[in-house]
Length: 294
View (cartoon, rainbow, N blue to C red):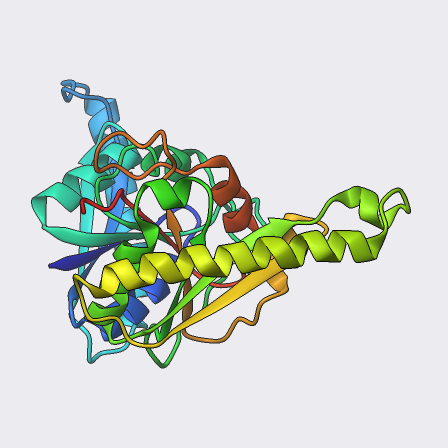
């Protein structure tokens, strides 16, 4: 299997390559670093367009080679310049042709440094890809180590699509620790005096106990089918999604795993509304997994 890293020759962002290298250290897989050029299809016999594409192809090749040259030399990274009608289509074509296990992409350049913002390419990719899509936060640097812990964001639509068994299976394959976190946003009225904060705390505590019980039941059912090591379970609560996500501890080597929404067609990835909010505030790389077939 292969890891596909999407490289933007126009933005010269190496964040997806850096995340792909970290994934490769974790899985032992090879990396394809791909720059996709958009062109009309079928190709037209237009000398002006041909000259322009030759220029763009040369520029993309040089930028990609420079980005690959500074990656660790102990990893197998193959640069590829691919032409397609669109960047998402080109990435999906490459994923299908190379038995790709995960596609690594970056954040939109309009997003905050250290956070993930979807752009037009990644927005379409998360609604059409049939393999997991991993997002590198904007400016994500090279990391010395591997992915050491996977955190499954449990709750809502993720329950329907089997996020816990999917993440448990992945953690076992990657020899990574497994953590399950459920996020909740506390009622804003509690911060304006209309609801007693103690009453709100009690509601959150009761919800947390129910969540722990539900996760324990799922873990017990999973252990009947596969070996699952010790699992950490946590609850993240705050007055908004950013506060809820930041209320749990994050470390280097962490990756957050989000499940596909209930609207996910078949094995495709599909970002649900809650998952999209969590993704925007994650300080670590995020992977969106397709619906678990089990």
